[in-house]
Amino acid sequence: DETIRELAKERGRFIGTILNSEWFNDAIEPEFEEIHKTQFNVVVAENEMKFDATEPKEDEFNFEKGDKMVKYAQANGLRVRGHALAWHSQVANWVNDYKGQKEKLLAVLKNHITKVVGHWKGKIAEWDVVNEAVNDDYNADWRSTNSVWYEGIGAEFLDSAFVWAHEADPDAELCYNDYSIEWGLREGSKASFVVEQVKRWKANNIPITCVGTQTHIEIAHETTPQNVRALAKALAELGVTLNITELDIGFSKGSAGKLTEADYAKQGHLYRQFMDVFLEEPNMGEFVIWGLTDAHSWLDEQQGKTEGLLYDKQYNPKPAYDSVMASL
Ligand code: XIL
Image 1 (tube, rainbow, N blue to C red):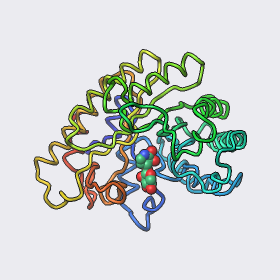
Image 2 (cartoon, rainbow, N blue to C red; image 1 turned 90 degrees about the vertical axis):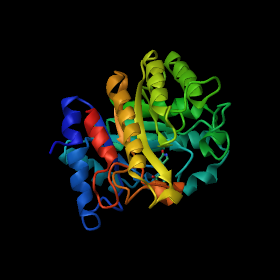
Image 3 (cartoon, rainbow, N blue to C red; image 1 turned 135 degrees about the vertical axis):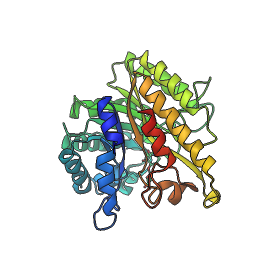
């Protein structure tokens, strides 16, 4: 049978999903790797390249788990997206010792980005340089609370992060990544705020090349594919690519066991619409799903949602898988 990867290759497109060292492990889930490498051509580490994983102690780096994924990608001809350098979440605890100390925090972030990007220079095609720096309000603005970077440094941490990442690997694509920017370009919306910042970054020669829209959604969110299309077009005018970076289309946990064929078909239809937008818009670079099998997903563990991916808990392809194939 043909695979997503084969069809993606014919079209010259990048379609991927995440790996997590807990189940990217033959002893635990023997099916996982086989499906991953035959169906996809992009790898993202779910947690292994985040700050707390890569720099658990100050200036003591641990690249072991990330290296394992990069080696696997190289052995199988897969593209690697790096995730994520400057983010308020999953920061190592020791960083909080420097709360409010601007110069020290700038030095910490610079050292982190320089060493992590430098370690995988030439091996990671694209980095999420800054993740989730905008708040959730309709009156969008920078996330100003619970962010050690923003509270200590101010918004210039974002600009600097891009500059340092570019210095460490001038050939890597560098993205700003966030959630809920698939909610449309209304006045005051998060998406509009991000586009304004991209405009400013480009005007100031900040080396951003891409935006990632995470796209953790539900089947009721029918307008989101067209919002992604509009965002891709707006960013095209600025010379910046749009990627779908963390797609999942979950159901509420309460509906588990009660889902009907129509529900799965609707989920497949939405996957298809995202794929159509991705294939039709010349300004879109990557399509990444935040998981492979419903047996392992942050939706169940943390989001009160379930069954948002292409494969069910027994690793059988769902209608959503067929929809993705049909669009290719
Ligand atoms: C999630 C992982 O899936 C979980 O395993 C982890 O415990 C928390 O982070 N936005 C992001 C991702 O950018 O890094 C998050 O991943 C999901 C939301």
